[in-house]
Image (cartoon, rainbow, N blue to C red; front, side, top):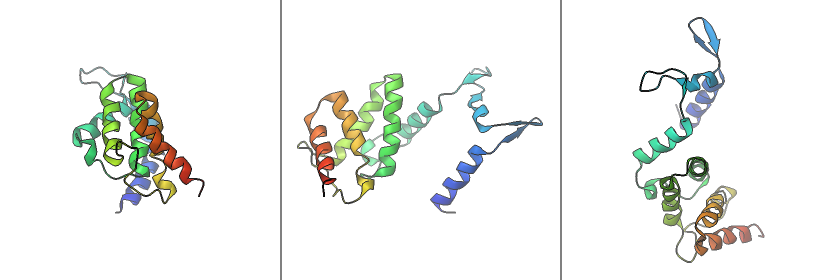
Length: 149
């Protein structure tokens, strides 16, 4: 089974109703789970859990992968977790990945030859907003200028 087939199956399962104790529940109802202390009805913060799990599995953001759509989409979600929780380790992880791909002059290490290589520009914008480091603004500007051609 390919990655894309697994993704489709997971989407269908997430949308499908679940049969529990003879009752049908939506997958969204499964957000309520038993906590480690045995309490039921405690809401699990799944977005934070996914981010923490990824950061545990891949502690060095430079090993996360190349400049592209999928990773930057995930990292933008991590930025939203950072904004909600306020723990700078989430922002620093994003910054570590972006810094692997741009130099101090704001030059991106990949040719912006497709729209998929433009989405990481969102991370440049949020990093500039958070840090005011000029290299992020310059790199974002290079993507904007690419749209002219």
